[in-house]
Amino acid sequence: MKNKITKVIAGVSVALALFTAKNVKAQTTPADKWRLGIGLEVGRPIGNAHDISNFELGGTARLQYGLSNKTALTLTSGYYNMFGKYVTVLDANAAGTGVKEKSKDLGIIPVKLGIKSFLAHRLYFGAEAGAGFETTSLYPDGSKDTKLILSPTIGYATKVIDLGLRYEGFFGQGNSYGLIGLRIAYGFGL
Image (cartoon, rainbow, N blue to C red; front, side, top):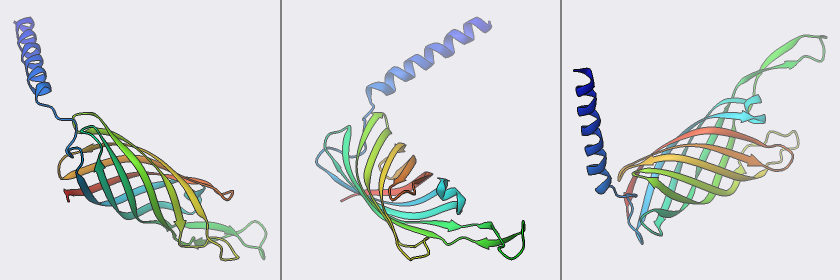
């Protein structure tokens, strides 16, 4: 009896897979069409950024142009804020003791160009590169850095919702760092 039920379940699963595979469309944006997505970004700073922050929050707008039914170009910009955390700073007046101080928040304006390629129904891989303009100085002289941004993403998109999990690396000026982030966006055609 168990063997018969297993065969029925397997048969129904194969039939459903074949039926849905015939009706799959790779992307929710047709070729030669524009889309705009407004997203909320949350992340965990890593590398040197983890020394000053445990949490990143931001917002982005992404303009997308469909090159084909499986590939699109993207332009993304917005604002990220890495919230400062309390760190122990050694007290110069008392040997071996430390004082808790809150690090400054680190603000970044990203401007990235990229490509989005749909691998399967609604599942995509994205790659972006661009510049990150720091809006906060972490240096005593008040200088701010401009970083090279490289960001691979794996995501899931419908006609309305876009969920993307990404690594974002910020490189340059001898202080490189990154973040692991999630973007939740609402998208619509233009």
